[in-house]
Length: 403
Image (cartoon, rainbow, N blue to C red; front, side, top):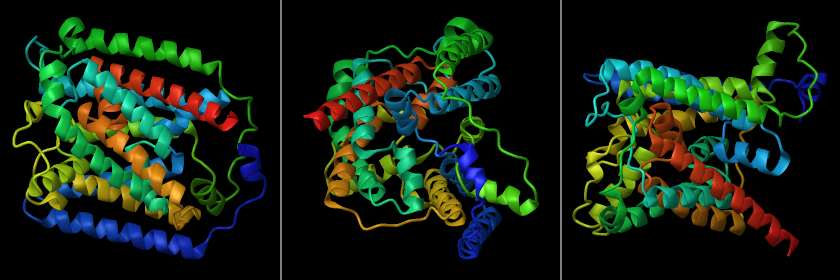
C-alpha cells in the first residue's frame, strides 16, 4: 500500500483498541516500577521496559529480516534491506564507541566482554543456511515470531515451539561439531587487525557500498505524506499504516547498542535457548557436558534456576507485550485458529531456526546484527549464509508452485 493511499482517507481510531493498548502499557510501566524498587531489580526493569519499546518499534515498522529479503528477491523492493543496512551502520558506530570503554586497546588474544564475536567455521555456514531455510519455511525469523505472537499470529507459537526443539537438536549435535570444526576455527575480530577506527571505517565503507547498490532498486517515488492537520491526525498516522522503513532501521540499530551497552539483556534467542537447555537437562535429553559452549560471548544459553527472573526473559516478555499494545492500538491484533499447514510450517521451520541459532551461537539479531556491529567476521558470514538460503529457498518455492 502506498503512502498516498494510506493518507487519502483517514482511518478512524478504535477507542476500544486504544484503551486496551493504554492498559497494556500501563501494566508494563507498573511492572518496570515494581522491578526497579526491588533489590538488584534495575537490570530486570530495564530489560522489560526496553523490550516493550522494541516490540512497538518492530510491530509498527514491520522490521523482519526475512520479509525484507523476500521483498527484494521477489519484488525488487530494496527498502527493507536498506533499513537493515541503516541499523548496521548506526550500530557499528555505537558499538565501536561502547567497546572502547570495555577494552580501550584491542590487543590480540583479548575480546570485549559479552560482545557477540564467534568462531568462523563450516558449522557457522551450515547454521546460517539452516536458519535462512527456517525463515523461508516458517515465514519469519525468531525475533519477528516473537512480535507476531503479540499480534495473535497462528503460526508464531508453533514456530517458537519448533525452535525450542531445534535448540535441543543443536545441543545434541554440538559436541561433534565442536570437535570437528568449531574448536579450531579462528575467531576474527576486525579491531584486532585494524583498530577501532579502522574497523568502523571498513564496515561503514562496505555498508555504504551496499546502500548505493540497493538504492538503485528503490520503487518508484510515492507521493509525500501531507502535513498532519491536527494532533489526532498525527496520532492516526503513527498507529495506522506502516512506519517508514528508515525509522525502523535507525531505531533497531540504536536499541541494539543500548541493549549491548548494559551487558545484561541479550535477547529472545538466549532466553529460548536457556529454556530448552533447562528442559533438556531436566529430562535427560542432552549430553552431560557441552564442550566449550559456555566460553563464548553473545547469545549464551546458560542454565538458570529461575529463567523468568532473568533480563533475557523479561526483554522477550516486554517485546511481546509491546507488540501487543501496538497491534491493539493499530487494529492489527487479529488472532486466528491455526490451519494444519500453519502448524506444520511453523514447527518444521522452527526446528531449522532453533538448530541454526544454537549452532551459530545466535540468530539474525544476536549474530548478524550484534556480531556485525561489533566488527566480528562471524556476523558477516552468518548474514551472507542466511541471505543465500533465503534466495535459494524462495526460488525452490517458485519452482514448486509452477510444478
